[in-house]
Length: 180
Image (tube, rainbow, N blue to C red; front, side, top):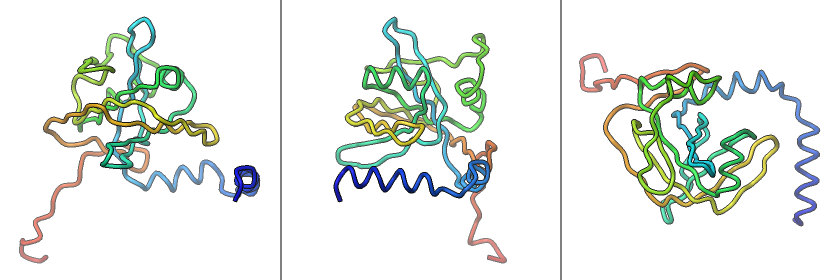
């Protein structure tokens, strides 16, 4: 199928969409995700961030990840610099998630640490430094596909987002206990 034919087919599918956006959001919220902060640095060295639950690994060799961003400050910087950091949040870091998702109180700003080429959150479960190799527009978002150039992790449990609320990880069930 030619590129033009695929674009035409996609436009036709968008026009045919019958699912209400609010209804879709309610149903897709049933997919539990981790919470990450995508970080970047502007030309004057100021760190910026955006909260996402759309950060995913795509390949192990080479280490490749993707994030979906909608237009905003972080989107503009990542698009122009071709680099971003990703910090996976720990249980109890709802404040960091909220800070980068809403209007900010600068006195409560989480701390960034530049371990290599881009800033990531100083405190997080895992961090990744990423170099963008492809940008793919999808409706009102841009997919930034990137190679991981550095990464690390610490101890702790992840912050989970499910049904539009924060959660900790599920409590493990002892399957050897009586009654199981």
